[in-house]
Length: 387
Image 1: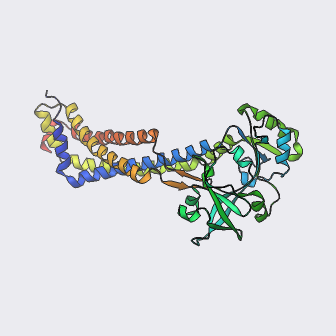
Image 2: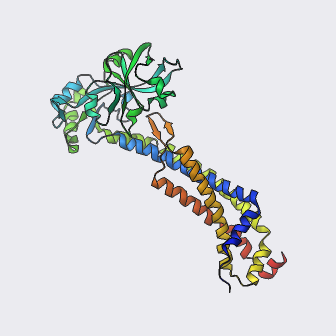
Image 3: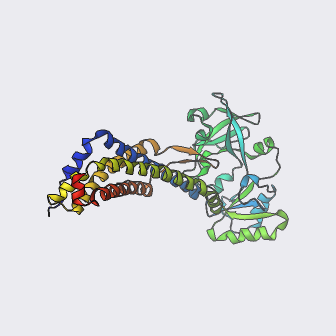
């Protein structure tokens, strides 16, 4: 018995029919690129929501509104009552870290250049918001006063405009009132970067409400949640419920699980179609080589050696497609911003996504080699030589 066939045997067969070789590469690259896209989408969204909440921050919401801050209505007095009635609150320079906030999804229009209105998340806040949201840092300008707004670094993605359009000094219109952009802030890796912050009284006046959406309490220790929960149970008249900020965003992440699963399902179905198409193409390619494979057996090559050669052909094609898909993923997918109702996230090609995608390309090569190999090797030699 002879050893393995020369590697050049596999490469000669690939380049002998260039159009078919290119079809194999293109089919593999489409499948792998879809896996890259689905993985980057899931990883980006999950990373954004998991890092947005702090375990030290507790949200005081109206009972029954645990799944949506926008639906919550909390009496404005709760802010002061929480400051005096809850122990373990973080204190900075004599000021308790308690922030009463109004959350509102509203239509906002950029004045320069004049564009159609876009939905954006608005947060009515006071200076205490910077105490509880400690990841927020003003990059340019200053905190908003009445008639001003502070915009996140990703707010332009939500609004569909350039960063220059929402620079300091630019004008925006909300509910018929004109506001001046006073500054730009960042909060890396969180949904806050897609928001626009404004004076709480301005937002309450324009939205005609006299209640808060929530009160955010920042604790000195993570273990202090029980004290906040005790406060809500003692003050039944306030009709409050307490939930960790991190848990709130975990619930939102769970809400979007079907969407993330659909992304994987879509990639899988399209990939499955490409795989079956590849099987048909390989069947056709090897149908004319049954006699050739039988001749290799006659001159001394084992079926195992021939299978390895077929596997080499398949892996060369699919790995070439995988390499092409990897290049496209880095050029096209990496760093792309995706907007959804909660905020904006970037597609992320981390180690896990890359490993899954590359493994898919290698697996396609193995699976693609099995059907044509069985077709060529299962036939008896006399019948194969006469085919």
